[in-house]
Image (cartoon, rainbow, N blue to C red; front, side, top):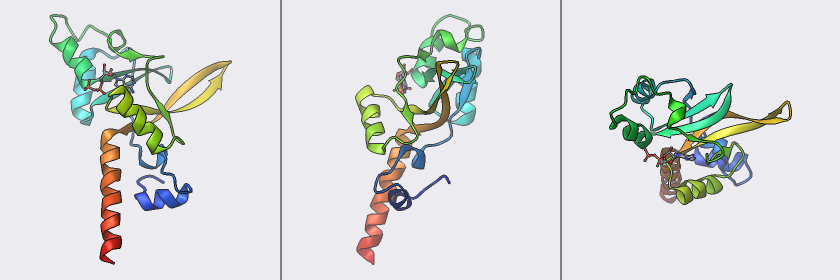
Length: 158
Ligand code: ADP
């Protein structure tokens, strides 16, 4: 199930709302994507952060400002692959599905970022694979807050 209300999530997970209850769909691209194509995709999907994978494994993240920085330079952004400018592992701040909202919001504030990729960690040939399964953003947090406030108001009016 996706799109839980705050109260549903609260009850289902023993009084803890988890990242998986309110995370959104991730947008991921391959490392070989050009900066130009990434800019187009960001407009098309109307999101601020795009995740980059290599063979299905999370390898990077790129934000609006990363793209602006390279776009104001004199270089041909159709020729520059996204992996040249992305923030890469091991510097990516991520979350897992079963992390609490509280822990994840702390990461966002502490690192001053807009979103974190939500990953499922598996092992393949003795190597850890980070599969991207979601995206947790400040917008998710705002919606959750609204849900909480509206539920409170409902209780008051009853
Ligand atoms: P913007 O740059 O559009 O304001 P952010 O504040 O999210 O967006 O990003 C600031 C910087 O941090 C960028 O260089 C970006 O690549 C990097 N960044 C964004 N999200 C993460 C993350 N989850 N982990 C590590 N670095 C990140």
